[in-house]
Image (tube, rainbow, N blue to C red):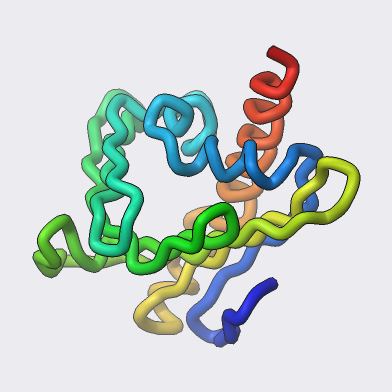
Length: 160
């Protein structure tokens, strides 16, 4: 994993080797037409996605969970083409502070040889209690399911 220090009290981490090339996984993460196909564990779904891929640009999604729509607006804090995305719901576009931020996500993509990618997703929280709450909500299972869905979706694109 590149240049990210981990605080075990506030950071939850998922690392997997995905059977898909880094460039394709990057495309799945950064093009709004792809995000609804993998970004939330099924049967929940994404009903809208807006991406402005630049530092300070929006990363907005709308989830449908059990018939309820949930807006999740945020901004990119760092974009390293093909390698790293950092985004937060602590702010929305225009650097407007969120009233109740949940986390900052750090996602990295590293070549793992033979068309595979080491995929790391970190959920960084404001406090140990917030991290614990996220873990109890099902971070490991949910983000693991999303990684599996991302891999399958990317493999489907590669087969086209």
